[in-house]
Image (cartoon, rainbow, N blue to C red; front, side, top):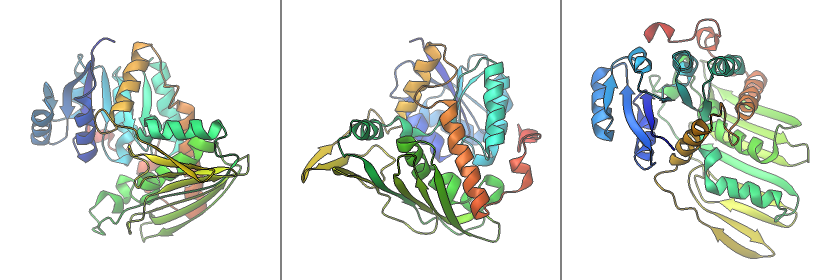
Length: 338
């Protein structure tokens, strides 16, 4: 592959994890970083050996040397920032959740196609070898017919109203940030559910502190999915079939191993990483661009759209609500700050 020059838009904690992985991927060049605070961009670029840095996002997308941009800003800005990059002719890897709602995502997919640019959601778990292997095991029938799956993700975040998960204008709440992972796992394993029920505990701002979801696949598999931002849960994923079961280690959505139990015999699977797990989505992006693909076969637009549409449905069922300005498809939130 030819060298791919990466830009990073937003220099927060997730951007640091991504930049760490970027160092380990051959022919992926840490080229330019941008933050609205120039000093923050300076420090980030120095830490991770980026060649250039900018104090605005418009400057980043105006750099003709940048091939692809990783969007690492809060949820509510993803629509505006991805639109900015695509319309400037850049390929885009956008951190999950892709957008606030499916209407925004549909517009971004259309813009990417109009501009002949690669676009992918950075839901890193979809690319992890362990999760790919589990799907293969299930499809090969090694646990028989899958019947029940339990997946949770809960962390105890501060109740400080300034924290991004407590801020409705930043797309706060557990569903879009944490609950997206258990929901992803259900869709990844069993596809769009035939039936779904959900319940959320909402705060005064109509964002969810806790959300529980039960889905039923077309084959009858029941998935129990939960997220909370007010308590640390085991963060486990287990899948049980008629002839065996699979149990992931804690923090199942990261590069961890799992145990296959079949005929009362346990087999352990381990998957060493090259860096920290984020490298797999970097490698996939580079591969797709080298092959002139506008979307990934592993993480196609259709999967991201299905995921976002299911979250739209859950929000409608549970009453999760966001300010009208971050839901807009007419005036992207943050467009005046670029």
